[in-house]
Image 1: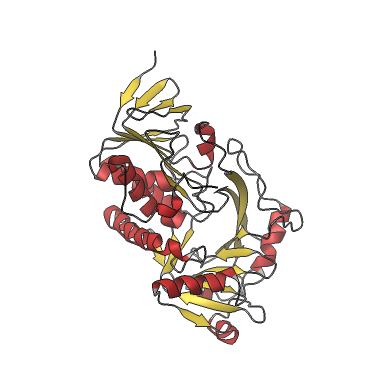
Image 2 (image 1 turned 180 degrees about the vertical axis):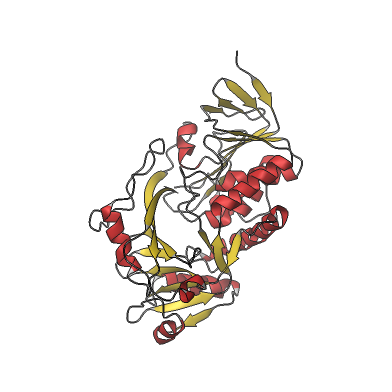
Length: 388
């Protein structure tokens, strides 16, 4: 017979969302156990790569803005509690054609919520941001409420604070089975069962494998590639620059960061036109999370190099690259809440490549749902029971 542990809440997965949920529970005095199959801050999922963007005039939909505002508050709270700088405030550039999602979406969100912003004409954009090479007719929307999150540091801080507040953390502990139950769901780690009042499942790309009871929600795991490109000119515009997202006329939405090390600039592709392929590079290829994403190759290097060429003072051959996974829902909105076939469980998943910035607020919402069964945070649009 294996060991049986008992607690109030188990958090499965201590990545972006699970680490925040565990800290929120522990700081409230809720007995909790966090279970992670690797180690917090690992590179086997979607929460590594040294930097993540946070922005407020949200191009994915104005309805996200209240939630990202809550996330700003929660990130500040984590910084205060940890004594660490986890968010670098840089401002944001959204650029593209006037009717592109980057520009029109940012303007719509800013107008709907009264966000402070500046809309730059093509000439103004070129003059203000000479380190960007804008195509003829491209405009830009600039907002001050944007910046860089440090993902590994944020996860590490949340897990450390959770431990200090009394949470038990199990690392190197793959979950083999989760048994839903309205009164005492159980998480199995090998032959050890952890019985609880509630279980928060924040397992990222492994969610559907751990929860075979879920119907087919259309969740898919996809590969993405990041590249760090060398600075070749005056580093000042890049070291003191803004996070940015740019919409190309071929359907590519890509993004980048100011230089954090004074030597390189990191860029990545978020989305491309459906079915698009460039020299063999295809960002939407499926991934088995047990194997992980295929390592970056020459096609990835060439694709990212073409985008790096849109920046002045940046080389087109990356010094290094990394692959990660997106866990996509059909509508690219998140899944946060309860499912009727998973009694006793709280689900967090399907963050579709744009979830990290919300992790602090997601963690607070998950803790609310586990503790009280409800939350005042604006998560209605993420109901896992919604039609897909």
